[in-house]
Image (cartoon, rainbow, N blue to C red; front, side):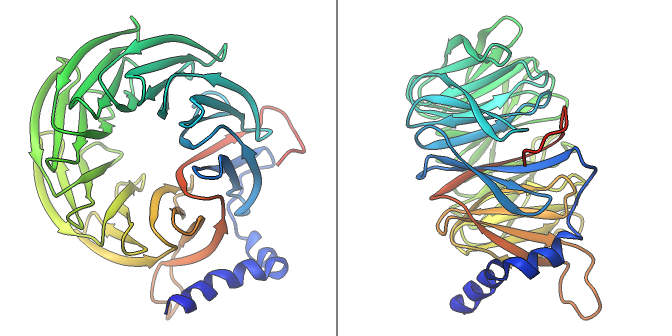
Amino acid sequence: MRKLLLIAFLIPLALAGGWWYFHERSLPTSGPLYREYAYITNGKSSTVTVIDLRTFRPVRTLQVGNEPTGVAANPKRNEVYVVNAGSSNVSVIDAEQNKVVATIGVHGRPYFVDVSPDGHHAYVANSGSANVSVLDLDRRIVSATLRVGVGPGLARVSPDGLSVVVTNRADSTVSLIDTARGVVRSTISVCMNPEDIVILPDSTKAFISCSVPGQVASIDLKRDKLLALLDVGKSPVSLALKPDGGELMTCNFGADSISIIETTPNEVLSSLLIGAQPVRAVVSTDNSRLYVSNFGANNVAVYDIDLGRVVALLPVGTHPDALALSQSQNYLLVLDTGSGDVAVIRKRKPKKLEPSEYSLLTIIPVGMQPNQIFVKSFLLTKPTSSP
């Protein structure tokens, strides 16, 4: 069966000429200046693969620093930022040219980057230095270095841009940064090994996954106060929030399940089996579908939020991890960390006698150990011949 799946994956790649011509005519486009790219960090190759989501072809392989991990895009300008854990710096990519145009040095073992809503600043959690680097993106320099807890993993900016939430994995705390004053305004003890962060759209609460005790912490960002510790499944490694902010889903890696949390009352509504070792999830913008990558099962589970059940299991490559949806929401990109590729799954109305609304469009080889993905769509600021 495994060999048959592999053959099915490789056939579209082998038939490059005719296959691409047939499919490109129906792929998403939106005017001659429209661009949509997926940026994939390849941890063991020290590269970033750029995939054009209008044609689903890789158009660039960019050499960045050592061991690239986190990646984020500027919401106000056509730039992408890549954190290089092994060389302790951040690569700045011009998305219009898809070229590395600057490198900003930070502190030890940076892991994650997030950008402020106004596009002027980025925040980098330096896991080996117990601090956060504040980047001035206009000048491309480090404007401040803020001391936080031990082993910071993530630094996430609230939607209103007023706070940055930092998870300190080694001392079981969360640091809250006041962005206007540029200071750490509070440190809150939560649960052991805090990792992932989601913040409600109205910026009133943050939720933190804690993998060791199998809990999620709820934090009031207006009063800087721990509100609740919610018991979920074993090893909740990541979180996915519905765009409307009403419900939160946890990927319980050690329990093969997801838990659903109602965010207003801080209540766990239910838990259900989803597949072997669920590791990442993403929710569609219409709040209807949850896509979960099952690292140990080599598939993606599609959970219908309205129906409350799994409606599809989609085979992908080896050890799927990070996920992203295209701007149209019709294409799901799945990073396969074991096989070093990206599976592209298409969602459409099934034709007569077709069993599913989902089908594998193609598999795109990237670098070794792809670990993060970010989709950036934009209009060119001026016409260019660059892809």
